[in-house]
Amino acid sequence: MLNLVMLAALNRMDEWELHLRGSQRTGVTKEEIRSLIHIVGIYCGVPAAVACFRIANRVFKELDGEEHDEKIKHLGPEGQALGCPSKGPATQACECEVTKVI
Image (cartoon, rainbow, N blue to C red; front, side, top):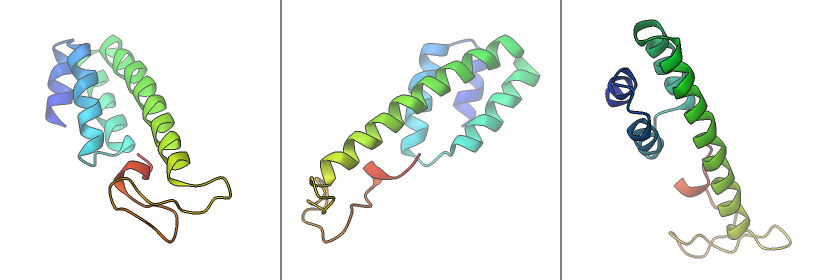
């Protein structure tokens, strides 16, 4: 999370996006990201915070779309569980990391 704030302060938005995506794999919540961006706005300026919010919105939309696509792959046409690519056959809807809401 500290990396996100430092990269925003340095206006390294391409790197900021990469680290934001990585943070989602390590359990950082959207609310924590929002709080970090508010701090960026206070200490680094509103333009930096606006750039971060734009990137975050785009990334979260992409990730939410990927999550939806993965859920479709895990369920059959009648909504029955087909199994999870990472855990094998299932008797109910998959709850693996791929399908959890970010």
